[in-house]
Image (tube, rainbow, N blue to C red; front, side):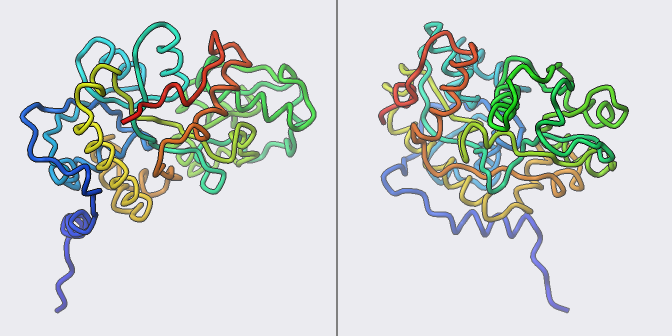
Length: 316
């Protein structure tokens, strides 16, 4: 009988085949690099790099710390409890405007119109077919002060309505599917894995990719540190960046295997991680992948001042 290698062996073999940039390979660091992440798909490269052994391959000793959201991660870095973390660019720009010396070092998960993972949805049996059908309706979002509501408003405007033509309310993502099916709200802006779960229960259908109203692609997550840490540890930061991009490249090409790793850290069953739409990971950190969301955040009052994406990116 032919022997079939285990999934662990397949992952290990894939990791062995990944080549890190020679300029970032280091001898083992004496100082442990404290990396703060969140078991959320768009932030998960740090988890893959850990399981694939890419940190060690890059000469890094990493202490991976898991938090529940980007806000907790930024708090940890601001307080000196971690060296590198990941959060969304708008939150990082907000912190910088308030005097926190954060700087971005690598791109994380992206929104891509080719593989959208945040979508405007209505009930499976809803008569709503177009943006104009939402005039005077209620749309649920995760927060009234994040990019989901900005994208939905921009999409309404692009489709001939005023940004205020619909009423927006906050709601937990896990409650959105049942709420829109009951008619408590008329539409929802859903993220994974809640979106696939609601689809699986037959509660929703997709109406539009509202993030397209911001840009065809932009960063959902960006790895960051403090300017002081980057300035004192440039080789370590370059090694980390190389490992993260290698992990992202692997995950983009191995979504089934990466789903298992994500499920382990996020404590989600395989049927959930294998069913959900998966983000694509960036292979670069370019101002063009950040500026559109900063501009819309400023236009809608989420940022106090206009921010140049280039000013937020570290030169290492």
